[in-house]
Image (cartoon, rainbow, N blue to C red; front, side):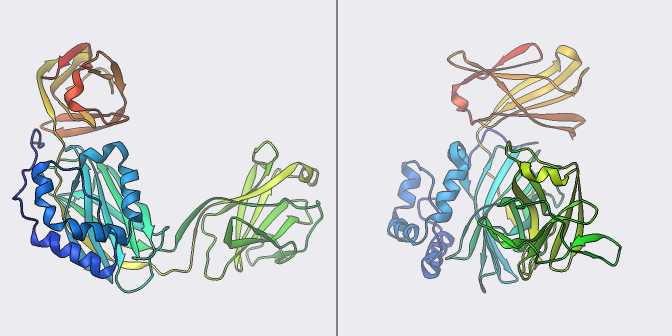
Length: 416
């Protein structure tokens, strides 16, 4: 069964030795401190002994924690502190906070380089939440939230839908790659004229522009430049990129745009060349050069940093938000049998089977009579005892105490 209708009580008023030790370590290392949740009187009293330490630590580096607060946004009231840390390959993985209602979860964690400056803001972390050692179809992987260069620390978010928090949840990392990059757009000037340039032929017979004929830099990046741009002897338009030392063009694309912002050309061929990539844009004739307004280079590519191989694993103890359970246990409109409905401030979960269609609409009505359609988040077949799990997610969190009812499949169910 999924956990619902509970909150973990505090263990006592005295801060734990682990909490004090972590604060001391933050002060010694100069790493940023966590911004606490708004707490009740008992919780505030429990932390009073650490107040001076907390103020000092927060002053040491608030960047990551400001980023965390911004990321949480309206979900901040649902965020619970989670503890756990492990180290390997010179990296320390530490849990920070989690937001969960038993069906969805967002876990925030830090990754700190204890040996050097191998991490950066575009580091790709291969990590996900797992249940009982198995991946989830609704896993969102890990995303970088922010990076603090002073403490060499990444703040990341791992997310998943379709969780069962009555089973063991863990955060699993399988690799860290600081070399991955993505650029939305590096812009260059179009060619000044439509002249033909010198070309080379690769060992595979592809015709590419010779390097260094029309060099040009972009104010948007120093990772690559245009080496040559123009037409070959057959009237085909080329853009040849030169990558900075140690960089690989990867999946970069280079295309011309007109003054209206419309992409020009009909086809794009890529040919790897020494130090970069040559792009042949079909459908662009010499007469079209006058209409070119810019050259845009965008996409994923790789830098010179070495990947960090290793595996890191931490159990994650999630504290689900408060829920209300509506027991139904009968067949409703369109042949759907609904076992129960579980409502939190983040999601409406419906356990059902059968039905004449693959989805249905769910509405939530607050105590002021305002009715809101709740967007479907996901559906999972065979979630429990042959039942399917449908998840409808509020676009912004709802105050559970202010919800009056839920409507679906022709019936309205009050929240009591």
